[in-house]
Structure formats: structure tokens, C-alpha cells
Length: 178
Image (cartoon, rainbow, N blue to C red; front, side):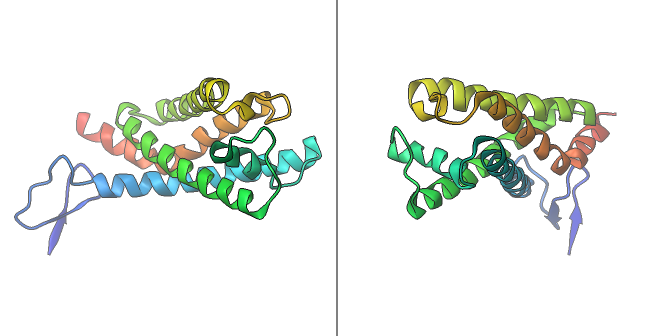
């Protein structure tokens, strides 16, 4: 049948040596699932914030991200823009989850993983909102756009929500080194 590789949860077929790419599919899958989970909670937090603190409709964060494609000065509250925002948000969340999986081998214990998740979320804020928002997607730094202090919190939350999906992976990376 198959045996488990000593360094990962990957099942290796008999006679097949575990290679560099042996666990890549599982790693990407973990990143996709982690990104979707973190992205959905990130989005729910933004939606709640929009309703409670900004007196905007719950779909406001979806409309904000839809401006990536429409380049509107003010996102129109249409079902199309909400759907574009949802698909864009979830796609980016999955890609960011996959990107985080590439950092996990460097984060060899739970404390480093938590700090790495926090740093990852804050770097996403700087790159997505401050750099790209100031140069390409101006709605994200527009005074009528997303509130910057809240966005820092939301992005830090995203990074921290990725962490539980990788705690076991960080421990497996550490075990062979010990």
C-alpha cells in the first residue's frame, strides 16, 4: 500500500522516495483552507464594523474590494460589485494563505508562528493598503474608503487566524531538527 513519510503527513507509494515536491499539494491545500477560513472571518469582522461603526451596509467591504477592477472613485452598491468583491476577496485570501505556508518552515515553534502570522498580516496591510492603495487602488486610502486603523486590526487578525492551521506543521519541522 503506502507508508507515511517521516517528515510530513504525505503518503508515499511503495518504492517511491519522498522528494522535494512530495508534500506540496497538501501544503497548498492547507494554505487554501487556512486562507479561506481567515478570509471569511476577516470579511465578517469588516462587515460588522461597517454596520456598527460606519453606518454603512454590510456589503460595504465587498464593494470596497470590487474597486480593484472597476477603479471607481466611489463603489456602486450593485449585486455585480458585491459578487466581484466576494470572489476577489476569497481568491486573494487563498493566495495569501498559500504564501503563508511558504513561511511556516522558518517558524519553528508556536511562539514564532504566532509572531509570524501577526507580522504576515501587518505586511499585507502595508503592501495592499499603503503601497498599492496609494499608487494603484486609491479607494483604499480615500478618506471615504476603509478606515485605516480598523484595517490594521483586520489584517493582523487575518494573519493570526492562519496560525492554528499550521501549529502541527511547525512542530513537524522542528522534530527532525531536534
